[in-house]
Amino acid sequence: MGNLTTVRQWGRAHPQLVDAAVAAALLVLTLLTLPGLSHGHGPGPGDLDDRGVGAGTTLLLALAALPLVLRRSHPLAVWAATAVLGVLAVLSSDGRLPLPLPLFLALYTVGRWLPIRSTVLATAVTCIAYAVTMALAMGSWLDDRGDLPALATVALSGAAAAVGVAVRSQRAALAAAQDRAHQAELTREEEAERRVTDERLRIARELHDVVAHHISVINVQAGVARHLMDADPGQARTALGLVREASKTVLSEMSAVVGLLRTQDEDAPTEPAPGLSRVPALVDSVRRAGLELSWTSTGDPHPLAPIPDLTAYRVVQESLTNAVKYGTGSADLVIDHRPEAVTIEVRNPVDATRTGSPGAGHGLIGMRERVEAVAGLLVTGPDGEGSFTVHAEVPRRQP
Image (cartoon, rainbow, N blue to C red; front, side, top):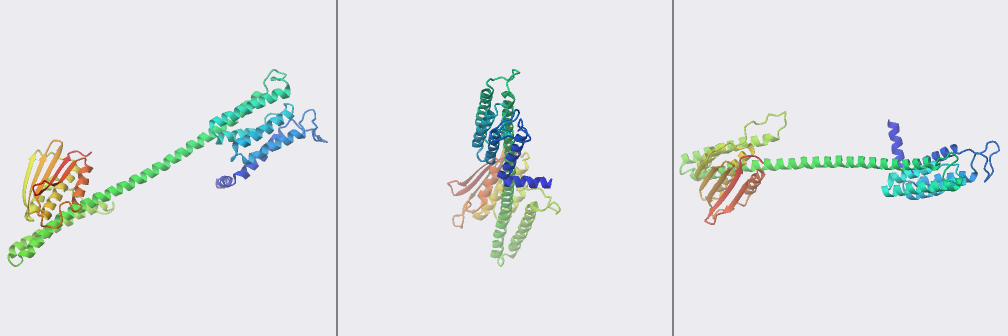
């Protein structure tokens, strides 16, 4: 098998040498199948014995094989030259010589490399030229037995061209299959890269939402503790307790998010992703952080699919975080449980004296990406009355 592969590789690297060897082999076969030169003394130039062909015919046959060396680069020209020399050889043999083998190879090459139209035209011209040549050489279309002597050779010509067309079609089908396989592989790689990118964005959003909320609480309570350290140590200790609780919560949630990156051999956290069921704890957390929050829940709280449930919770969390960071200390939260979706609305007055604004960071971008990922609706912005409003509609089912 290894030797055969080496031979094929050498043949692809030296096509003209291969064609020259094939042409020589066909010439030898053609000469061996001639009606026969006279044996013994041999014919002189131009002499013909009773059964054989002359030296002129032999020369024409040899010349007909020479163009085959260029058959891959000039298939139509090689066919034309081989056909003319072959027909002349048949004519010089008085019709006793069939079409030479080199012409069959030339027809195969035309079928292999040229369009169907050119192949059909070359085959038709070959058949007609040979039939007419045989009729001229014999003086009749039929032989002594009443048969058409050109019929068998015409059939072989058509078969040679048909084999070339079949090989070309098979090679084209194989190349198309390889292209499809290559394209499918590229598509799989692109899909894998897209999924990796989406997963990175999802984890980045989770980390942002977890860290932003709790760090905001820690920042506020740390400021309160520093301010009241001397004036009201008891209240300062309470603020520091909230800082400790918030830091513990953020570490726990970060561990759950980063656990998604662990391998199968490692122990990953099994705590479920947060959902609207944790809103009461979230509300209590921001209230203890100093936010005067008015919370209203309406409708029947039907269960949500996991991703929409997490999305709804993160929208509430990010909105309340913005209220703590940029608001005046109060906010209104309304969660309306509808049959097809959950509507969330958070409104808080904005403190114009604070640096930054609710839309300055990546929180709103992350919220919008989350809501759009579940085919929901998100509208944010000032309401014209000094308050900032977040309005979200999260479908119950995953898209």
